[in-house]
Amino acid sequence: MFGRLKIYWKNFDWIIFAAVLLLVIFGLLEIYSVALGQGSVTLLNFKKQLLFALVGFIGLFVFAFWDTSVLKNLSPYLYWVGAFFLTALMIFGRNIRGHQGWFSVGVFSLQPVEFVKIILILFLARYFSNLATKVKVSRHFIFSALSAGLLIVLVLLQPDLGSALILGSIWLIMVIAAGFDKKYFIIVGLALIVLSTGAWFSILKDYQKQRLVTFLNPTANSLQSGYNISQAIIAVGSGGLTGQGVGFGSQSQLKFLPEAHTDFIFSVIAEELGFLGVILVLSFYFILFARCYRVMKRINNDFGIYFLIGAAGLIFIQMFINIGMNMGIMPVVGLPLPFVSYGGSSLISLLLLVGMIENIIIKSRISY
Image (cartoon, rainbow, N blue to C red; front, side, top):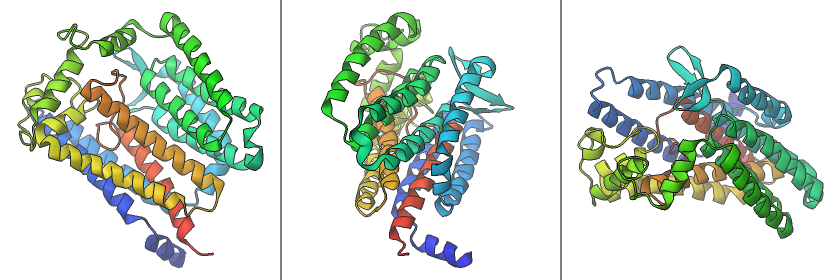
C-alpha cells in the first residue's frame, strides 16, 4: 500500500496543484479584503472559505490517490442521484433571491448543481468511451443530449440560468470532442433558438430577462438593472496597472460593488491588484489548461481523454463567463470565478475535480 502511495506521490502533477493553490490563495486574500470593507469583525465568510479550502484540498488528495475507475463505473447511478437531489430542491430547497438551489445545513448551505456538473462529465466520458467506433451513430448523439437535457431542465426550474448554461456547454464540448457530424450541431442550433424563445416566455423570471436586456445596453439604466455591471466596469477600470492595494479598493470597500466576494470578485482583483494582478491570476489558469492539454496527448484511454476535455472545459467556460460578466461583455448569470469566488460547494467540487484530473495524469505516467 505504501509503495503504491509513493509511486502516486512521485507522479503527482505539482504544477497543476501549485496553480490551483495560488488561485485559492488569491480568492482567500480578496474575500478577506471584502470582509474588512463590509465591517465584518468576525470575518465569517473568510473563515468559512478557509474551512472549505481545507476540506477541498483533503478531498483533492483522496481522489488523486483513489482509483477513479470506481467513479466511472458508478457514474450511471451518480447521474440519477444528482437528478434526485435537483428534483428534491423544488420541495426542500432554500430560496435565495428567487433562486431555489441550496439545501441548508445549519450555517452552511449545499448547492447540488456544482457536483452535478462533475457527475455529467463522468457520465458522458464513460458513455462515449464505451462506444468506441460507434460514437457517430445518431442515437448516441440523441441519448447524450437527452441525458444532459434532463439535468438542464431541472436546473432551469430552480431557476439557475448560469448553471444550466454550464451543463449545456459541458455536453456541447464533449460531443464535439466525440466527433459527431456537423449536421447534428445545425439541428441543435435550430432547436436552441426554438427552446430559447419558449424559455423567454415560459421559464425565465423577470429579473433574468432584465439581466439579458441590460447586457445589451448596461449604461441605459445604470442606477437600477444595470447597476451591478456599471459598478463592476468602474472597479475594473479604476485599478490601473498596479491597483489601489488590498483593502483599499474604493468600489469594493465602500460597498458600491454588489456581490463583491462571489460573482464580482474579479472586479475586486482588478481594482485592488491592477492589471498586473489580473495577468497573474490569468496566468495560473493558463498553466492549468496548458498542463491538461500537454498530458492529454500521453493518456492512452478514451475515458481519461474525454474526462480531461470535459473538466478543462467546465473550468474554462465558467472562468470565461464570470470574467465576461465583470467586464460587461457577458450577461450577469450568477456564476462564480473557479477556485477564487466565495462558495463552499463550488470550491470543494472543483478541488475534487482537480483530484480526479490528477489521478488520470498519475495513471498515464505509471508504467505497468
